[in-house]
Image (cartoon, rainbow over the protein chains, first blue to last red):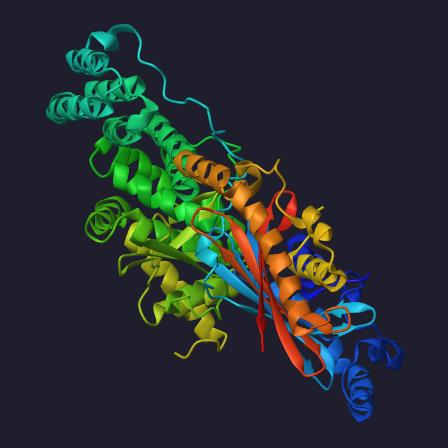
Length: 483
Length: 144
């Protein structure tokens, strides 16, 4: 394999990373060949004979063939951070040629981004011989370059709303006789091609809709949806406003339909990230088995958008609270049998009850006052040594038999830790604090000390207290916990 | 003919300059068939922006094709006047920087250094990416 220039070398390296191809055989064609020597250096050398002698010695060094190890390390770190090469966009950013000892070397920077994070790859000391350009050192920096924000947003994969689709149905039947719908239809007819006039007329109708929400929310939802179906595409801002209205005042399936329609609108206007958030929010209110997986960021946006939409509706808040609970199967799948029951009991007794009254409203307030969904960030704590894990999260991660990341969300400086990914949506596990000493009980319970506990009809906090005592006593007896 | 990457494109341009072959530049220029879709297809944007890019390209395409031709003619004449022999010079690509403009065009500025005896020159090639490959958008020379 001959790589003719440093740009092509960068493309070949990215191609390997995208394909997950990092074996010695995959990488070998890019490295300095083991038998490279004077005959390969002399034709491209522009230094003194002494320089050439020194270079011949240097290229024999194994140190210059560690590019394969570097590539594997970069691939492993990208995997650990959840970087998704499948949707990533990238671009060579700069190349600078330098000469050392009469030989041409190049520094190559590559900018990349997936849905969640930027990445810069650095090919350092890429080396030219008569056989082409070779990879010598490779490293990754998890930082944005000047180019990264101008790279195209990754496509939705698969795209649930192909551009041109019309998911907002035109109103029909008795809803057309609703006074507000009839008024909007007449105003739009009168305005003709004058979009400003049409916009003003619909704004007036929207004020009437606001009053209807308190009297008859379900009717207001049907009216909002119907008016959205009447609007021309050029009034997309108002369509979005109406659909958000429809989502807030509807029941779960209707709210989900409005959110999916908003996703379609956002996608048609090139806002792929926002579109994913709406689609993900719809999943919380009206889950459809077999939906394609979404990135962590889209899941977080989806959960937050769903909370934002549900904040004004008891129907939606009930449905969302159920959908944000962690199912028992998650505990069974990620903790060993001896401890799964104990961890699930702590969740059910101490944390799940706070979900609706404390968490949902708290997050909704934060969204309203601190920059909204777009200001939120989400980060995965991957293991007990991950610096983004809190103390109790380290304890939980250490206790797991099948590791599952714990997700921490921040909204405008407010931290909401302890979400988990279940079926492509985030669920709220909570902080899971048992107190300073209690947090250490998770690994002990999962190491076997949680087994043999008889609940004897206990429930709630009493059950957790008795089970925790059981774990502590067994661990103390085994000398694994100071008495 | 276009080039698969701007580095290869700059090497083609160096070869054209070394041969003094103005006609050799033609296949490297944006062709009359190039459309806005070729330029902006990699960067999905709002329909209004696509329309704007298309209009801008329609207005600028003739100038984008003519500018490198004129620059090459000037460069060859200047080189002859100064006695700089590109065919005998040692010339190689030295640096490359990529830019993505707001309207979605992806371009690269490539610098090649050339030395002939005591004389030094820098050839700057501005390249633009399309779905069909990389094309020359502008040429310039700086004498040291």
